[in-house]
Image (cartoon, rainbow, N blue to C red):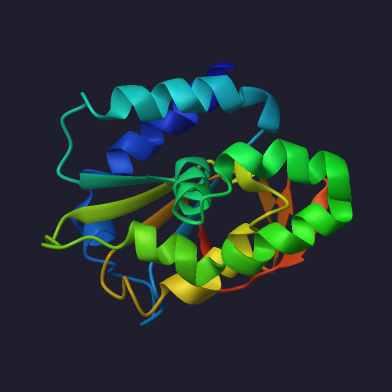
Length: 183
């Protein structure tokens, strides 16, 4: 547990680093960063994200909780209240197929967009594990680049990242190579 706390302190330091905030040193790549952590540390990370709002940093943290976005998408489609009955009646596979028809990467990104970007904005994506398997992190990241070209994106990721592969919960592998390990 001490290791995760020390790493979260380093993350706070990143939010005060001008080079990080300006996406410098990335060889013209989009500033997508993965903050990997052991899934067992989920509650420590959630607590940190909650407390982050009160921590004084140079960064203007724009928090995007994928689970809350998923619920909003379901509300917009007027299926949120019916989802448990649909899953029970049709089964897991049919339910997953149905949900992915409307809970698309573009639907998520639509809810992540905001007006009045500032130079020190950091898009903080959380809730990655909560939306699996309905939405996978790599699908969001592949589609987010045009919407946030100058904004550093930090994904709080319960798992690991090899530089080529995202491994959710250290079990489910997905190819993705355009991000950087943050620490």
